[in-house]
Image (cartoon, rainbow, N blue to C red; front, side):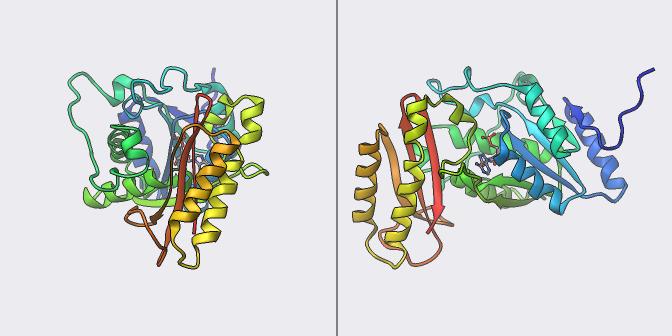
Amino acid sequence: MIPPPSPSALRQLTDVPALRAQVRAWRAAGEGVALVPTMGALHEGHLSLVRQAQAGSRRVVVSIFVNPTQFGPNEDFSRYPRVLEADLALLTEVGADAAFLPDVATMYPPGFATTVTVAGLTDVLCGPVRPGHFAGVATVVTKLLLQALPDRAIFGEKDFQQLQVIRRAVRDLDVPVAIEGAPTLRESDGLALSSRNRYLSAEERRTAPALYAVLQGVAEAVRGGADTAPALAEGRAALEAAGFAPVQYLSVNDAESLAPLERVAGPARVLAAACLGRTRLIDNVAV
Ligand code: AMP
């Protein structure tokens, strides 16, 4: 006879009724629930989100879903890393309570016709470079939040624009979930951990930390309220000299509205997207 799973075992849930039944059971037992949405290929950055979730909630659900609707036609959906067994081992190790593993038909059944779009915040930065991306993100995250109905959901500041888009959608639609940001985890040389880093060649990997160095340099230069334009021009030239091509954007933006800033007066962020070979890297720092 197969023994029942121990209380600490990672539960694997693939459909919405099973997810809801599990969350309902935890709730009935007086246990708080946090959700960490991911696309898998988990690394220490994802695990730091799980630990933040565990610090405030008794139960943590991690979703793994490579969401097709947030990839453009020429992006890396088909080659996005899918390493489920390794992901489940990491989630077991970190002590997550459940992995929610829906398939595409569960998330987008035939006839699916509803999209969540967030205006304004998506007109800048990654928005124009990746048309449709944030509608895909906002729609899938809204679904995940309504499917699980956790108390809290944790998202990385690594994807700062995504975090702001999600905060706005959740606020505008009265989704009853607290959205929390989590700091970016980095390699010792400054490169932000990312599932896409595994695409980098050895030479690209040596170049990649220049992105964080430039962001820090710009943040330092504009902190006192100096014009942002000269620091941004210098930073862009440094990225191009290091081998990034193209530099899609390097920008100083209001941390709340994401409006581009000519001078910093309140909370602001320096954000960049730039390619090394076929790999697109994004990163940002607080000013
Ligand atoms: P992804 O699987 O890339 O969609 O990321 C899932 C979540 O992990 C998102 O909220 C990301 O912002 C977050 N994340 C990705 N990389 C990092 C990192 N280096 N540090 C902290 N959070 C991260």
